Length: 124
Image (tube, rainbow, N blue to C red; front, side, top):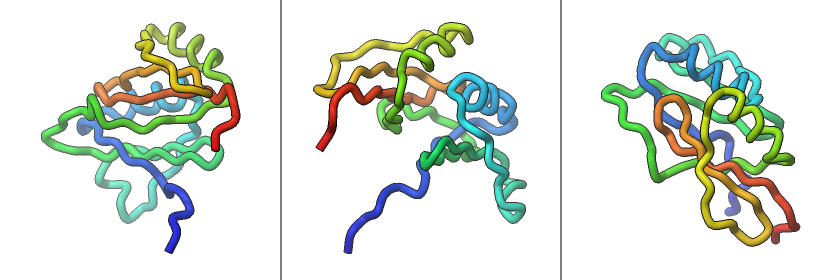
């Protein structure tokens, strides 16, 4: 048995705030929105994809943001995303750097923590 990778990562969001999710994940981070299958679209939330990375936002009520647990998204160019975040008024939080990566943390509009990493060296 061997794991091949992640199919997707899911984060929670409050009900009725899909437009904010589309603005942040689509316009700011640059993900493409993916239509949810019709049989689960009525549940709310939204799905996004960029390359082989797929991120789902599912509605949860009551909602509690993930402030410690987080997806770590590996980027080609963190500078591009940092400029888009700044233009949107989103302040990244610097942290200790990991060997081979430049990284920042950012919260989505709902308070979920995201780690954004740029590969600056090869990783085993």
